[in-house]
Structures are given as C-alpha cells and as structure tokens.
Length: 148
Image (cartoon, rainbow, N blue to C red; front, side, top):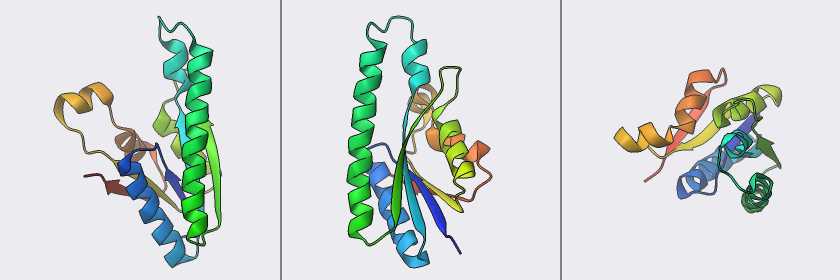
C-alpha cells in the first residue's frame, strides 16, 4: 500500500518514536524511506539581535547532519532502503511544516510520519506545533506518533 514513506526527525525522543514507527511500516510494506531534518533559516536570519547568524546556521546544519546519519543507520540496520535530506526554510517566511510538506509532495511520499509532543496551553501558544502545521497543509496521508 505504501511504497514511499517520508519521516521528519528532529533528534527528540518523540522523533525517535516516529522514526521507529516509520521503519516498522517500511519493513512491513517493503517501502522506501526518506528521512528529513529541517533547519529553520527563516528564524535565524529574521531575528533582530543574532550576532552570528551564519555561525548558528552552520552549527544547526552540522547537528542536523548528525541526526540524519544516526537515523540512516537505524533504518539500514533494519534492512530498509533509505535516503536522507537536510531541508532548509527560506528566509522569506517559509515555515518548517511547509518545507516538510513540500518535500513530501516533491519526492512523492505515499505517507508522511511525524512525532507530536502534544503540547497544550501556553507551551503550545509559545512554541507552536510543527505537527499541527503539517496536518493543516499536507495532501499526503499522515501518521502522527505521540510522545510520552
């Protein structure tokens, strides 16, 4: 049923659960897996008082590449055909969910998998929700994996 599964990771425990679920599904469905990590350039370069935006961007990219490599290893150890991609938002206001959904459309994914922290109230208001943004804009079927 699913031949191309895209999973978004961020290095969190919730993201690790989503990756594990995506790996299990890919194995069951004999599907290809694409793992993405998104660097939010829009938030780095539009912040007013960031003294070293380029340095911060480089460190976020390096961290993302490490997370992707760790995720790739997990998928390969499970015998899954996998590719990874580091995404970057543009500085014109693209959001992380937009970058993920656009990649799912372009690849094209049959299923998009993401973790959700399930924040509510003030934490949700302040931090927003990548998962909620994906739900609002994804034309691709979506599996949300709940954290704790």
